[in-house]
Structure formats: structure tokens, C-alpha cells
Image 1 (cartoon, one colour):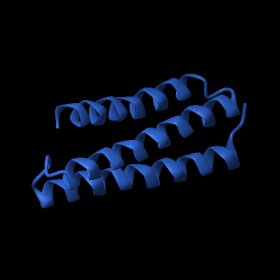
Image 2: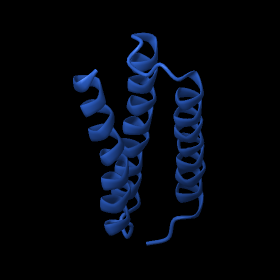
Image 3: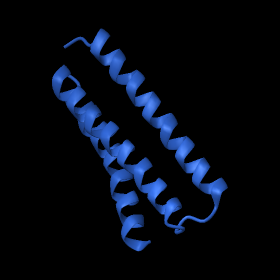
Length: 92
């Protein structure tokens, strides 16, 4: 449980860090999108870790798992929408 919990924390922190780093490089469309892609991958990884915690019985509350998973899925959807907007409307 502690190992997967640690992985959840690392992947969740990676989401934010990649968004921030990408924003810092937003002048360069491909760099911006690369970091947003990393953030998306970390969000998907976080969702997988949450599912693993639930499946192994480490996260026993079905309600808490559902809440965390729903928030993560919403973040994934928002990231995809944001990336699409950058792809279509980015200006250097």
C-alpha cells in the first residue's frame, strides 16, 4: 500500500509540474504540447494507481475511490480539451 501510495503522490505531482513547465515554455508550441502530453500521461498513470489501490483492497472505500477517480478523469478530459485548443489556436 505504501509503495503504490507513494507512486500516486509522485504521478500526481508530475501532472502539475509538467503543466507549469510547459506553460513556462508556451512560446514554443511543440514544447508546450510535449509537457502537456507528459501531464496527461501522469494523470492516466495516477488513475491506474488509484485503481490498483482499490483492486488490492488498500483503498477500501468505494466512495473515496469513485471520488478520486472521477476527479482524475475530469482532469484528463480538461487536459485533452486544453491540448486541442493549443493545437488549434497557438500563436508564437
